[in-house]
Image 1 (tube, rainbow, N blue to C red):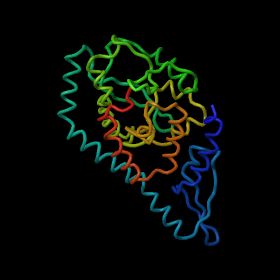
Image 2: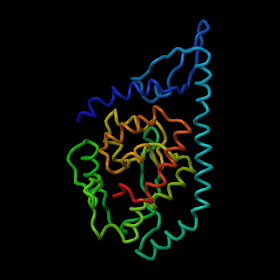
Image 3: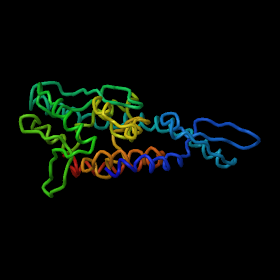
Image 4: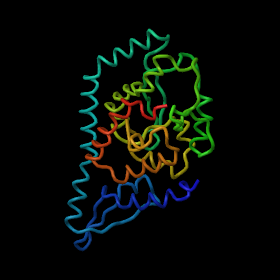
Length: 275
């Protein structure tokens, strides 16, 4: 794919423009700033020189991870309290609709590929193991091969593995179309496994299929929503998602995080690109 050939070169420029700094050294009155991405992306190790104002701007950026974490805790806790009645109603509906647990736990890859337990409301029939089906889909999707996909009533391609009526429950179809099945991930955010905004986490076996370029999206905490989620979501090929994720990593800021989070709200309400 053309995107794969050109992706790393394009993203290198973006990442090297990122103002975040994790180390400062002075020599003869000048400052040397090393992008924080050099930790996780060795081939992008590059020094930048700057004067006093640039250093002050970079130091102000150093508070971004702390501010982001505080925002994650505050908003996720507030939403868990506010949405508690809705989440209880969803849990009851799941139990009445089909047997099995209310919460479905998956192993997903987080920052730097660290695995964590990822929570969702169960939307599939209990006891149905669709892992092998999904592995085949994931391998084709990540590598850009032709994959089975779904189409909306408007003919829009949605990249999701094919399912049948015996797999997804009646309540599950509604949960998926509205993305309400994702609400338990607020607990992941509260625990620190995820952030409100970031690249969406992949299954453990999907991470193992990544190329070196694709693995760069693992350099930050995964998110409940992200730049790709409001720019196509399931309509995007995987390399398109990676390019958007790396663009977010290069430009991220607290204000942009808030903008992405607020822009996400109407997407599930319209059941847009959910598949």
